[in-house]
Image (cartoon, rainbow, N blue to C red; front, side, top):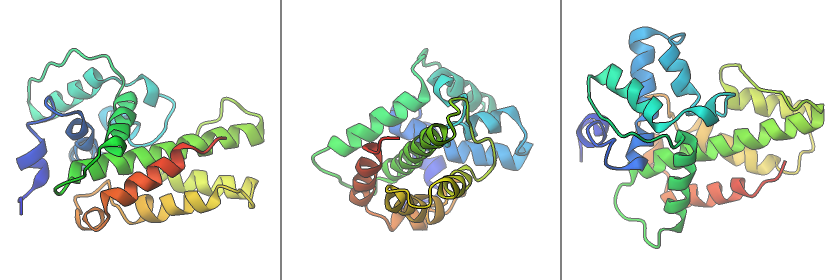
Length: 206
């Protein structure tokens, strides 16, 4: 029942709630793509907050807030050097541990979806590194999840963890359009199903 969730619920609350902070990433990235293009440095940095890239583990909350302030003309000052990816997994773990899940939880669902895909990409990159005996391997292509999945299946078609990765592909990468303003697919998923999948992907060992 809320018109334009990003503007009316999230845009001015990034300094109050870390789940909302991270949930704004794909929408901020989209706006930058629409206005500046997909080669813009800020767009590429926000891409590294949605996919496991070589610089993902170095991007801090203050880095993101700097991009956010620059684009939206806000003046948030958080003085937090915690990395965004640490924040992502801290919030995901807290959502998993919550005894009750109430309300729409759109920000929880967006954050959990990003966390699931990030964990899956971490696993695939580490497994590919082991198979190739190349600890420097990174995937720098667009549509990264799909490219990693395709390469890993080529290297090991009988991968035991394939069924879990298939669930991620169907649940997150295919049906949830995190890079668009389409809310319907993510609203149709229960937070419980996302928690279950996050827990399943989190225990995979490369």
